[in-house]
Length: 221
Image (cartoon, rainbow, N blue to C red; front, side, top):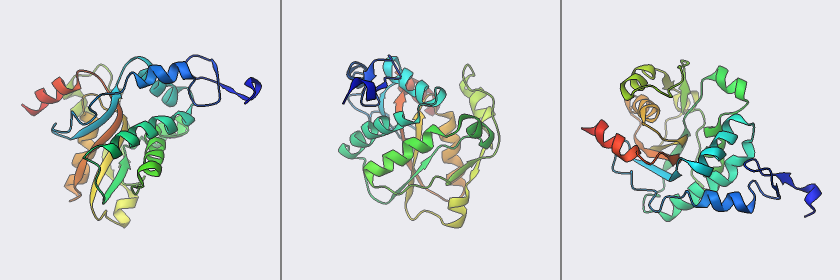
């Protein structure tokens, strides 16, 4: 393909015919966790493709804040490939993305978790329910809050969505989000489903900070 027909890599501005240039693609692959299921024994089982930092942190930021929705495709593909290779991949799961508050999603133009879930389901062939959950209350930014502060902020911010009100899933739910940090958001979403009698198998995420395991261990004790 002619360089004049190529786009710019969103991370370094090099010309590329793919979502990322070859250089940034190598940087992104270096973020992959050798064992994505290492957090599956936590309070809420978590499967994460990579370590949140470096190139993957910049890629997720570009997806969310720089109007680069096309980046959801390769990120989801890597997550899906790792999931399908794991022993955790089972049938009869319904994928539910973590929702955004409607006003915030309107401002951004899309929910990155929705996009990631769509591509993830394309690759895994799992059914998708984008309206499984609804975010009914806008919350302040969680960055900088303590674990207890996050839990308090997220209290009652989710409700059962229209999709599950119309038809409950026949099996368990697999939640999906872009980043898994302290787990407060994911636990609040999972608890909303559990209160309605819906089983939650776990959560898949593109990346998680390197100290998440330690934080989860503290939350369990």
